Every structure is written in C-alpha cells, then in structure tokens.
View 1 (tube, helix red, strand yellow):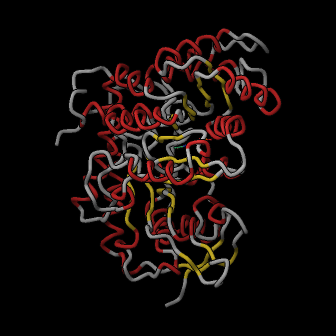
View 2 (cartoon, rainbow, N blue to C red; view 1 turned 30 degrees about the horizontal axis):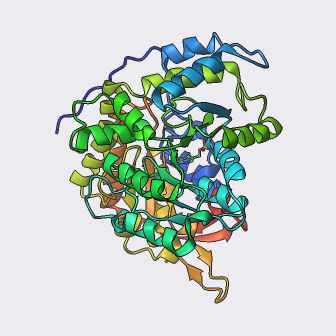
View 3 (cartoon, helix red, strand yellow; view 1 turned 90 degrees about the vertical axis):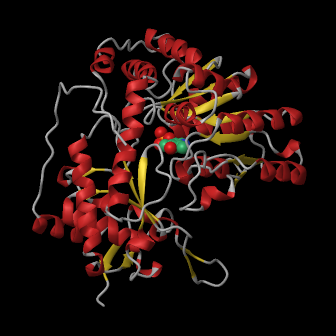
Length: 459
Ligand SMILES: *Cc1c(COP(=O)(O)O)cnc(C)c1O
C-alpha cells in the first residue's frame, strides 16, 4: 500500500527533547510507573491523546489575531454559527469550553431521573454526564465491536436488534434520545456506516425519539464512508457530512478532536425548546451565549478548523498515517487491535506480555516500558483504568480487553517519527519477556488510573 506524504510544510517548529535511558528510568520510577505523572517536557513522542493536541494551521493562527473579544455578539461567534450550520445543518449553536460541557447541557435539558440513553458505545465523559443527570447509559454496538480481531469495515455500527429490544422493553417514553458516536472512540475509533445511521433514524422516527450525534471525529468517520461504503466514493466529504447529520436532530462536539483546535466544543440542536433550556444553564455555568466558555479567538480557530478538517488531502493523509503505524507494527508481528481505527493504534497488551497476569497490569507495564526504552508516552486502557473490586465479593474484576493506546495527534508528527515509534515497539517486543509486572502502592477511590502509583513486582 502506498501512503501519501504530508500535505503541508512546516513553518513553525517546537523542539522536543531526547533524554537518556538512565534519566527516563529514574523519571518513570519517580512517577510511580504512571505516565500521567511524567513532565511532558521529558517526553520525546507524546501519543497520550489526540485531544487538544492538534497543530493549528497558519490560517487558524491568523484567525486568532482577529478574535473579537466583545462580551456579547462577537463576530467570531457568528462565523462559527455560519460554519456549523453549513456543515452540520443544525439551527441553534451553543459554544462550550469543551465536549463534556455540551453533554452536560444536553442531558440536563433532556433527561428525567431513570431515563435511558442508548449509544453505540458511550465515551466515559458521556456516560458520566448521563449518570450525573440520573439517567442510565446503555452500549448497544454490534457484538463484533467488542471483539479485537474481527475485521469489519464499520465496526462502530449500532446493533438495531438490540435497540428495538431496549425500546420494546422500556417503552419510548423512557428514552428521550438515542446517541451515535462517530467514530466510536471507546471501541477503538471504529466508524459507523451511513446505512446504519439511516436505518437507526428510520427506526427512531417510528417512536418519535430524537437522534443526537457525538460528533467528535465526524470528519474521520466521513472519510471511512467515502472510502468503504457503496455509493459515496464520488461524493465530497462535506456532502457526506451534510447527509450524515441530516439524519439527526443535533450533536455534541469536542473541537479538540476534529475541530483541529486546542480547546473548545459546542452543542448544536434543531429543537428551540431544548436549545433554550441548554442556553439558560450555559449562562450560569459557562458564559454569555455568544462565547460559552471560550475567547473570541478560540471561536475563530474552531470555525476555521472545521472547514480545514474536511479537506480530502488532509483526511487521506490523516487516516493513512494512523494506518501506516498499524501496518508497520503488524509486519513486525506486534499484536494490535484490528481493523486500525481513525485516530489511534491499540496494542493488545495481553498478547504482547502473555507472562504478566492481569492482576499485575500488563498494559501499564507496557506503557511504562515504552517510555523507559524510547521516551514515547501512550496510555493504558485496561486493568488499571477499568479494574475494580466487586461490591459484594470484594474480589478483583478485570476488563476483557487489555490495551495500550497510541493516539496520533493531528498534523504534529512526521513519518520519521512514526517509523521511530514502530521500530521502538518492535525492539521492545523482541525482549518482552524481560518486562516485569506491576503492583499498586497507591490508588484513589475514583478514576484511579490518573493518580495511581505502582512498583515493579520482583519475580
Ligand atoms: C473527547 C470526547 C468527548 C469529550 O470531549 P472533551 O472535549 O474532552 O470534554 C466526548 N465524546 C467523545 C467520543 C470523545 O472522544
């Protein structure tokens, strides 16, 4: 397969520092084998997340200089409104400081206690905001979406039979909205097909249930549709996006992903009553409706980013770069989740480190080793993030999948950086049996992975 070269040249550079093995060995011990506790300056390649880490273009930076910081009625808001209406087609645009606030406003406006919100797979902030607003979050992705090895082009699809069953069981009055996350982040960045979205829409119309997209990676999803779904090859990405969003009633958006911005988000809706409720809360928790939680310059960067992200050459390069890393790893026999998703490559740590039991956090051990050996930061999505004690028996419960995510920031790293990541991982794979398991020495009661401290197990 041929991969495209970067469709940009570099005007501004940021130095990154290569440290010695000895320094990294000391730093990772000091950090309690937790990559969240490392100083970012001591990281050579940072693949912790693709959120808020995009490189902005010269066009976006130029937009920052024409930020209108008026308290009310900033011109940058009107430009964002125009851009979102143009691409997404929704009427009411509510700017927020990031995606999770759009979620909170939406659920606050739409949920009653005990209501059910289905999704393909809820992202963790989405689930948390539903539960915070006393609702119940259900994950109804197709069964293959939970299997790390099934190759399927649209593994993020909603399972319509499961959805019908949930509606029949609870009644449509208990389901104020259904969500679809594009691409399905928690399921490995897998896309959802237009056909699946259309069928979901048809089903929901029978019951008068609104469909709201979690649109964080909408452009990447549209690229997968253009590439892999019959009838879309000759459509422009913007046409595909418009068609996709026409099947829904609104969306939540984190501009830190496909907004190509470092901060920001919005809620977009067609229903004036829900928009009014959300706006009333916005004024209490974020700010005036024409800036939300953002500066005028941020609004401008987002509206320019939303236009750039649908550029065909950009998306071809973007998806190809992630795929390129995945293919290098597959060629080097390194076990990864397949197919390769839109924004990240996921290492299968259970297969990578078969000698380390789940109780000794193989994913975290691999993430720590990747930093120690090569200065690369990744993130564990496994026993440390999701493991917990059973409430009744007190026994340890571990998740099915033990993954390490290599999220690729947009427009930040070159092909040579990607080669370096792949080569480092292939080297580590060759000496994998030297890697030791870890044990917890400190854990917080909630979201323990952020602050946990660990030590190597002597075996
Ligand atoms: C990042 C993300 C969010 C939350 O957005 P923030 O800007 O981080 O608050 C919601 N849903 C998905 C799918 C995401 O990836």
